[in-house]
Length: 83
Image (tube, rainbow, N blue to C red; front, side, top):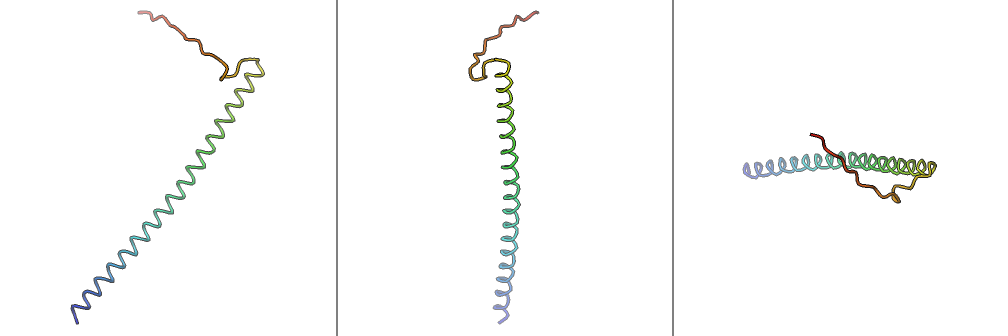
């Protein structure tokens, strides 16, 4: 009878530990999901700012009559190094 109580007690402790572990895992999962959502929003805002900045540059270039960045052919620059 005592042996059965020991086994039952050990199983109860094991179940409690498993429940606590699962609760911690769920809390970490929720924390990660919140941080991930925040990161996705920051990335989305950065992409919108980049697109807006690119459109602004294109509008300014068009107002100056300059070729668009995609149309411009970069010319190589050669510099002489003085020693």
